Length: 337
Image (tube, rainbow, N blue to C red):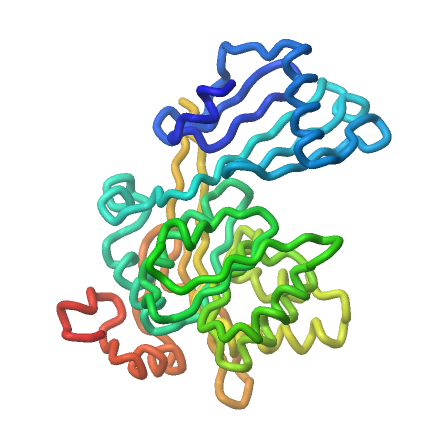
């Protein structure tokens, strides 16, 4: 299995107890003819268990680990009745998305790219959503290159996937790895506010920590994060459902429209030949009047196509503040920033 791990074009390796399934950037998703022997599976599991100093048996049937750009999850056969299940997600410290590749593979249009670049330059707060494996973090990594090097970035993750310092060695960055038992997401967000960040990059918003992320935006910080949902218009409700305190959930739900700016949906489709296509399906913006009324998520990209180019005035104000007058065009052509 080592050659599969070493192959940068492979993103996921999954053993279901009988078959080895591979996600490949070029070949798509396919079933390998490689068979993992029971002895190898036990040795592999034992090695991972020793590395992270955790037991793995029918009483502690879930083993999770992170090492060398790999995120490993193993479920014991006492509960995975098809056989011991192994999932390996690869997140190497490289960028996979580049302008020409994105255009060539119909990931998005040039106009969409120019717009997203300008959103980062205008210090928009951006949420990237999609289902598991859709490539949310890869788009986030791509967008980080447009953050000025003199703006401090703090990344907060439980599994290191953004690799900001490696991808941008000349930029000011602090990378925080959370630990549920000793240093939680909530503690990390609170602590990072005392480290003078310009940007907070939260690899995934999935729990009550989103409440503190939203509160950090009220003090003038900027953020990018990802979230699991299949439509940008569901993001406010998804955020409300993450927050345990019902009163705070309602308040944060309203503030979502005020402090978040841009939302992007990445779609992943597998065709009949097993080929994987990832693309930008939706782009929208959160909009609210200054008195907090008329809150909405406005779509201007739907099904991978522009349906509108008229942005709400509060969004346009942020572009103008950063000397970007034509947000859908390359800033260089207009003599912007």
